[in-house]
Amino acid sequence: MQFKFYTFLMLLLAQSLLAQSINEREPLVAAKEITKMLVFNPVSALTMIGKNLGQEKSDSISELSEKLWLETLYDHKAVLPEIELFATEKLVDSAAYKADLEWLISSANSNRDFQDIRLPPSLYTILEETDCRYAMLTYLSGFRRKKGNMVGEMFKSIGVGVVTAGMYAPIPYSYQSNIYVLIMDKESGHAVFYRESEMPDGNPLGKKTLKVQFKYIFKKYFL
Image (cartoon, rainbow, N blue to C red):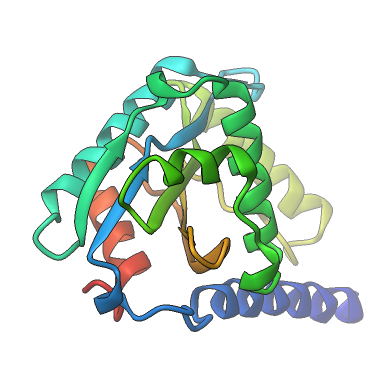
């Protein structure tokens, strides 16, 4: 039992160190070199957890979170480079854009070298039509719980605690807010910046939460 407990602690430590190393990776370009950025509309995949503990993607709260993240960027435009927004409506194939973005974020999240995170041809073509060398891509995920779901999750946590003799009991959260930001360079054709913020119990539709995550992602860079 003691061995299992220490194994669990080591797994937690490894995950924590990986997340820390991802956020501490040195950007390939100094912030002062980025004077203008093409900002693509973020892609959000927020889920709603119901009373039966089932999860389903919610288009309404996902779209709202995209809007709120853009508002957060504009609220902090004084510290950011000049922003040119490229709206999703202008995309020829929005499904392909989402797939490309998910692949890019997945590659960055796996701690892959920036030089190996290449700019997809579809996004390169869009950048070629602008005077922006750099592009910001953002992926949002997380969840919210419906009223009444938290009670069931609490009982589930207690049950796990009983089965493991108190060695482990997952902490249920009402919310989860995850933000992944990637900056791509048109000239080099690869990523130059990647940071993420995963906030347990952070409301993905809360302006205060998004402000905290913005500051965490861009600390010692644009801030």
